[in-house]
Image (cartoon, rainbow, N blue to C red; front, side, top):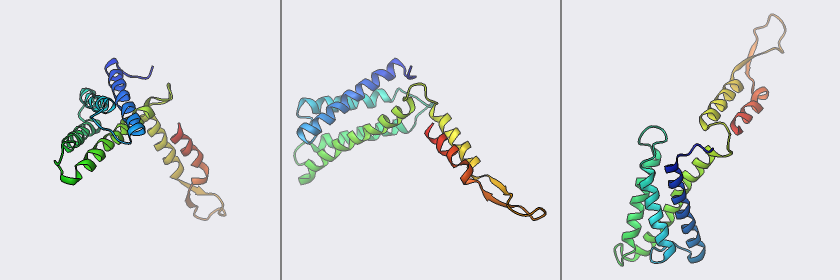
Length: 174
């Protein structure tokens, strides 16, 4: 299927619910406010997404996704504190709004990276795509003798960009 565990699927569903609530709040209210139902769903869903994400070890240990989860929780905490009157003075409202908006932005990092690694279904794994791109690049820039010189002359070496550029581009899009 998409190479996702049941726990990973639960994590994904929670994050999509949170993201959906946040986007609907943006459209409807022009902000995410934990004082209404959509805002509460967003905040709780984002916290659950971060917490469940700490138990997912895609590459064997603590990594960038875990750091993003910690940063997201810190920003959510700052935004929540800013929601109390005068915690940041006149800037409280701005800190709260920017904080919650920033966490929506953070949702898009894993959304884009995970979607690009799993879709289209059956596509080569990202590691294989990167290896294919690297091989295409090596073929594209390897020195190739220039056969335009007369026999006996030292062959000039040039980069065969014109010959292998399409192979490189194809490997990137594969």
